[in-house]
Image (cartoon, rainbow, N blue to C red; front, side, top):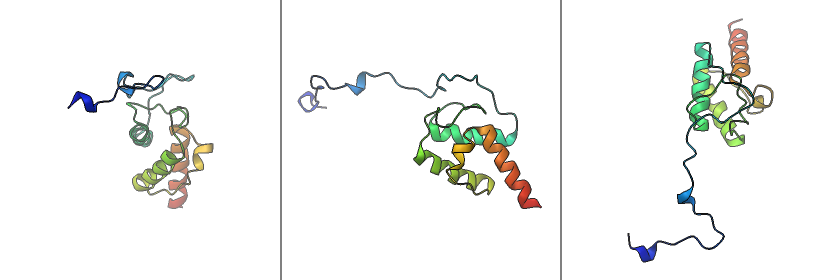
Length: 115
């Protein structure tokens, strides 16, 4: 590429090319990592990790603490519906913001549907 077309950052601007790659590692959280224990938790943790761009998500990791936000919450609800045929609202993340809590809600919903 022609060097004259490349622009140098102006004084006071951040040179994004010099920043380290944020990576896909789980952020340091107050609670320790706890791996999924059931196939349901494993599938949920995989969905969360894909959406959040992380290598792994523990079952007690809070969605918001991992970088989740309203747009990702909507995508998460959509993926849960597609994977488990369980309809949840994105507001559910206010009350079940961990994989373990969401798994419990899904198990309960599936149990209610069987009755």
